[in-house]
Image (tube, rainbow, N blue to C red; front, side, top):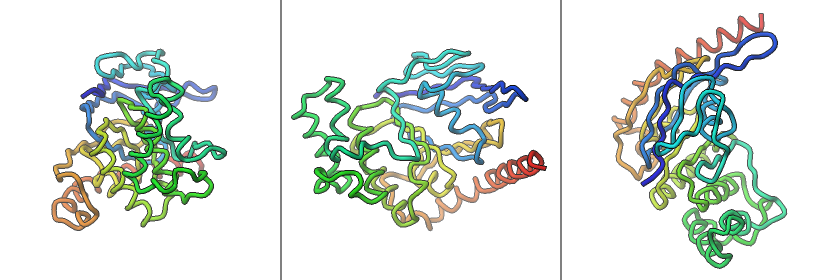
Length: 272
C-alpha cells in the first residue's frame, strides 16, 4: 500500500512586515501507509500550516516532507497540488448546480482515468456505503449538512488519493450528526483504506478515529505528545465509555489543556 508520509525538521516562518511569526518548529513525524493520524492542538498553533505544506499549498522554511520517498516540500519549494493528496476543508466545495452523482463521478472522468459508466458505477457503490444511494440525483442544496459532508468525502476517495487530508471536516455539525459521520468515515476507510491526516479540536473525536493521536503545542507548533491508539477497529461509539478509551483520554487531556491555556494567555497578552 502506498501513502507513507515522512516529515523531518519541518519549520515554517511567516515574515510579515511587522514581525516574524514562527508557525512550525522542528516537527518530526512519520505516518505509515494506511495509518489514520489525528492531530490536536490549540487554534492557530500551526496544524493547518502543516496540512497546507503536505497538500502543496505552502512551502516550508526548513525541513522536508516526503510521500513514498518523493519530495513534497522542502526549504521554499513544494510539489504542486495533485490527486495524490486531496483535501476536504471545513467549508463545503460541492458544485451546487450539479447532482450528487455528478459531483462524485466528475473527478475520474475529467482525469480520463475512468469512463463515465465506470465512474458512475464506482460513485454509486461508494454512495451506498454511506447510505446515500437514493440521493444520487439530488442537488447539494437538498441535502443536510451531514449528507453533504459524506458526499465530499466520497468524492475525495473516488479519486484514489494516496493521502486524504481532512481539516476539521465535522466542525460545523451537531453532536449527533458528528457521531454518525465518524462511524461512516471509519467504515469507508475500512472499505477503501487510505493514509489520513486529520485535524480536529475534539480530543474524543481524535481518539475515536485515530490510529495515532499527535498533540501539538501552542504556536510555534511542536509535537508535545504522540500516542498510538490500541483500540481495535471498526469502532462504535459505545467505546467512548470503555476503560481503555477513558485511560487514553486522561493520558492526553493534561497536555491539551496546558497548551490551550498557554495559547489563551499569549493571545490575551497580544490583545492588551
